[in-house]
Length: 136
Image (cartoon, rainbow, N blue to C red; front, top):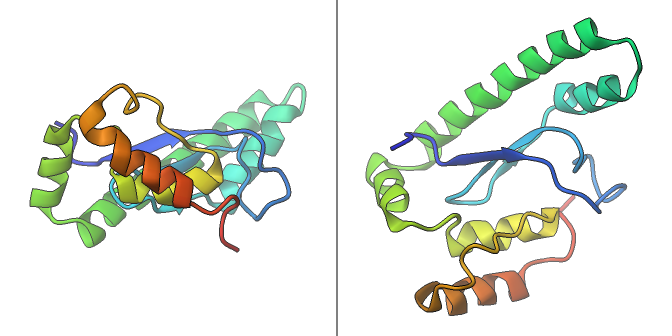
């Protein structure tokens, strides 16, 4: 069991909605739906677009990755009790309904829960009630 129930990834379709760049690396909590993306993460995305920039890109990527890892550790320790993390890890859910509600505006939607009838109603309600864009 991982002590940090946090996701990493990138989403599409939210350009211009907020400072959040859906194409840049980010970290998010699968328990509460908190999202973290630093200016360095957005710089990593910009550097990746430039040709012949591998060394600068990798240097920035490693620093940004370390920041996201640090955020993940601090967030898990400060915001979630050990029992909450253990209960979530044992639940088999990819996200809690609360996290799904908070992450949906960022385009982060879990489709793995849909076939499970016991989870469908609560997760479906969370998705339907979520804002259509991230809060500013």
